Amino acid sequence: MPWEPIKLNSGYYMPSIAFGTWKTGNGQGPVDQVKQALGNGYNHVDTAQAYKNEEETGIALKETELSRSDVFVTTKYSGTNGLDIPTSIKNSLSNLGLSDVDLYLVHAPRLAVPDIPTCWAQMEKVKDDGLAKSIGISNFGVKDMETLVASARIKPAVNQILLHPYVYERQKPILEYAAENGIIIEAYSALIPITKSPGGPLDKPLNEIAAKFGATTEQILMAWTKAKGAVVVTSSSKRTRLQGYIAAGDITLSPEDIAAIDAAGALGEEK
View 1: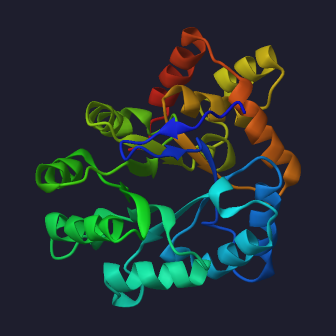
View 2: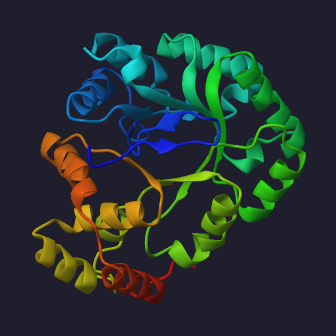
């Protein structure tokens, strides 16, 4: 597989591209989309308490031909309904129909109540109790991570953040701190420069690089994200797009390609 598994500081391996259920909704739709992803080369599913489709994800996992050990499952503590971490993880596992998840994340630093050290101690207990193989965070900035690491017995395995070229300069300190501390970065919304912000400075280099590789601009953004050392969390209801994202793992951008994307991204930097 072009998307090689990445070893986490917990000792476990995580597939480096994931199918995310953030915007897949509820009902049969997300069941079908997760099953489609699992049937097209994705063996990492990323959901969350707040997405309200853990149950649908669980149905898809049950109906797939893949065994439990073949699928890496991530969910997140989102503070939904004011529930605490011990209650939330048990509810999530029940919804998913699983005895444990591969990765459990704190969805945002604002959910760390009364404070980050207390919250993280509860996450460490989730791992100690065998309910999650690895634990991590999402949307944590450098100061948040510093506070966490200072008190942690178990370091977070990952930090899942917004990452694309238009926010790269802003997010770069997070990537650097994570690298220094053995924390893997997961990137969501990597395709925003195309899907939400077309017509910007990135259009020209993305189109030129895509033409060179005989690829789509979406694939080039995926390859750029991979080149930054991040795990990609993506989604699509279209099989051809899902397959294209998998194929993007075979694209190796040159240092010049990456520099051109970085420079164009900085020109259109989101403040």
